[in-house]
Length: 222
View 1 (cartoon, rainbow, N blue to C red):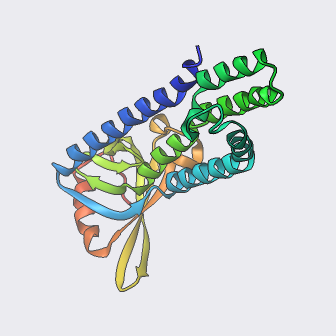
View 2 (cartoon, rainbow, N blue to C red):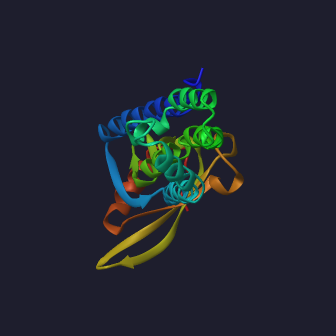
């Protein structure tokens, strides 16, 4: 029965693996077309992923580590052989029942530890999602014949309401152009604010992007 608590992180891992595999397939499809790799990334996802992992680490250090170290000092190596056995719910429950039978005072501590261990195991999906968001955030935005690869998905040209050039800026010794994108309401995958984003690309790539956009008659270029 205790195995059910390990199912959540396993399922999350499988789902994340599926999404990452799908993202890689889309990337490969994009690379087979005419494309421009921009200087932009999905910073929102990147920052969100980093924050999730930081919050998780802080929570583990603050709430789980103290009771884990205390239980370790009490039961390893007298009742358990190694540190990793403290992460096996069935093992801890069996030890708890044994100690209750022989009326060992510290048995009650294991009951509290089991509750914290269960929460710890169930919460491991949080850093897994954080890693997924970081992976998404590290992917460069790619502009191709099919559309724009952004945030792990391809936004087709006919899904865009309009695009506009928002001026140039200099980074180090290179000049970059800002391209503003507005997604149609019907195709937006999130709140109103997520319908818009800005892409930074090298100044010399502007003409190539214009050609790709003009090939789609659905786009309004400003």
